[in-house]
Length: 265
Image (cartoon, rainbow, N blue to C red):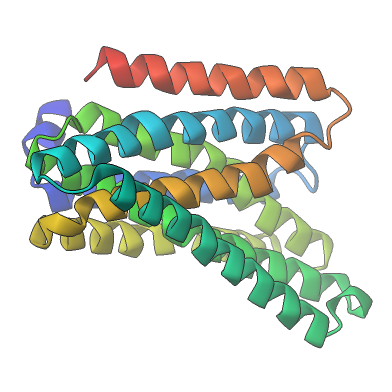
C-alpha cells in the first residue's frame, strides 16, 4: 500500500490524501451514532493540538518551500511571500465579515437553534476550502524540488485531518440535538468536508502548470491556515477552563509536525 502511494501520480496522491481528510471528517460526524454530546475537554484538546500542527505546517511545509522556489526562480522573495501570506488572511477575513453580515441580516441570533447549526455547517465548509488548497499546493510543489517532500505534504494532510475530526462532530452533534435523525446529521457533517477533495485537486493542478505562482500560492495557503488557527482553533480551545493544558497541547502539536517534517525531509 505504501509503495503504491509513493509510486502514484501527484494527482492520485492528492486525491488519496484529501479523501483521508474527508474520511476523518466523516469519522467525527459518525460520533452522532454513539453520543449526543462528546466531552468538551477532548474536542478542545484536539483543536489545540491541531492548531499547533497547522501553524508548524504553515512554516515547514509551505513557507520554507515557497522561499526556496522564489530563490530558484530569481523572484523577489519577501514581496511574493508577504503578498501571498497577507492575501491568504485577507480572503478569509472578508469571508468571515460577509458571513457575519449575512447572519445579522437574517437575524440569526433570534432564530431556532437548527438554523444556527446549519450556519455552523456552512462556516466549517467554507474553512475547508483553503485547507484543501493548502494540501494540493503542498503536493504540487514536490515536482519542483524546492524542499517540499512527499512526507511533509502528507503530514500536512494528516494535520488537517486531525482538526477535521472535531469539526465533523461539531456539525453532526448539534443537528442531532435539534431533532435530525442520526443518519441525516451524519450526512450533513460528512458533506462539510468533501470540498477539501476538489480544492486539493485544483490547488495541485494550478501550481503544476503555472510554476511562477507557486511561491504566492504556498504563502497564500500558509496565511489562510494561520488565520484559521488563530481566529478559530486557538480561541475555541482556550475557552476550556484548563487553558494551560490547552496551550501545552498546541505546543505538542507544533513540535510533532516539526519533528515529522524534518525527520522525513
